[in-house]
Image (tube, rainbow, N blue to C red; front, side, top):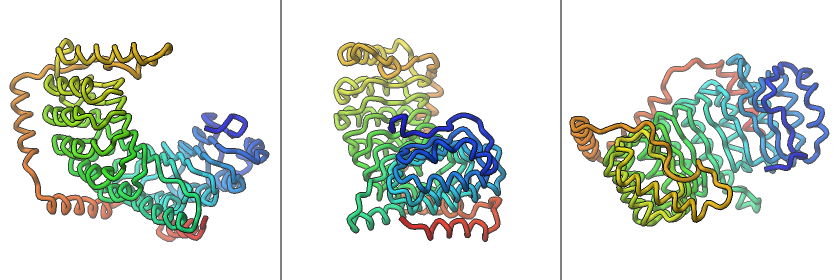
Amino acid sequence: MATQDKVFSLEGRVLKLDTAQDLEAHIGPLRAMDDVEEVRILGNTLGVEACKLLGEVLATKKSLKVANLADIFTGRLLNEIPEALSSLLTSILNLPNLRTINLNDNAFGLNTQAPLVAFLSSHVPLQHLYLNNNGLGPHAGILIADALSDLHAKKEAAKEAGQDVPYLETVICGRNRLENGSMLAWAKAFSLHNKVKEVKMVQNGIRQEGIEQLLTAGLNHATELKVLDLQDNTFTIKGARALAKVVPLWAGIQELGIGDSLLGPKGGVILADTLAKGQNQKLETLRLQYNDITSEGVKGFASAAKNGLPALKRIELNGNKFSEDDEAIVALQELLDERKEEYGGDVVDEDAWGVDSLSDLEELDSDEEEEEEEEEEEEEEEIPTEEKAEKLVKEAQEAQEAPTVQLKDDEVDALAKKLEQTGI
């Protein structure tokens, strides 16, 4: 993180900056900062002309490392955003030290993907990408993932030419409706960017077939992964088996988020059994809320924590289907409390230790248990690999063919071409 004297910030001032003149009243300090390393423009709304001026100023800041451009288009018209975004991304494309770009909470979708795709496929210094809550959808999701695959080739070419090029280490792309249709493309991107350390793709409507593809044909290559958060997607036992297959490959993983993902009773047991084998010695945080995990699964996680996860500090299990006074949950609480006492230090962050509040547990009745067992048995019927692949390819094709309101093709193409012609 940059020191305060090297940060320019308009963060959260809720400014409505339509014109260059509107922005000029606030940008004087940035003009004067020759060694600025971080700019924070988030929480304001910028029009086309304001973005053009900001882009012109940013283009001169060769020391810039972090550009936080989150939430800067609130209230803007659909036809404004592509040109405004293009002005910004074109300007920062040539900045040699810009390694972090944050575009969270901007409504891009398919209509605004062209300048974004052109930038992401070309900005070789990119190391940390934050693209959360942008309304992408599966089609734009494919284009973004493909752009990252193209970026890998350009990074490799730059390395061969003797340049010092960072690996892509962080990809935050949640709340974007990526769905199954884009998972072939994302799996390919992660198989290439296999030095990635942090991946968060929460709440994307990814179903079990897509989860399986992402894990077993993409993230399985990311052997240096430290943080993985796939909460609020759909695993079922198929996804649980896929996770159990690949999690031993992540020896350095510290945080695993699979909450609200329908692991199911058997899925919980499968994951617990895998973690108990001791191949994830550095795992500190395990998020498993609202997954229909039963007493048997809790027993498995208690055993895993004791015998296979020596670094585990925090496990989240609220919203599952067991009793609060279950012997296994009590044992788990006692174990983590003991670790907190021994390793927590003088100042303890209580939210980083122990079992979470179990205020929303469910009781599992016998009828429900039988129904879930039947569903899991159906789920376990193995679909041939070729058939799985065909299904995902079909969903990808459907995603790309889905109708959408488009800008005029010549306008979008011109923006993309302008970016593509700009080189490092």
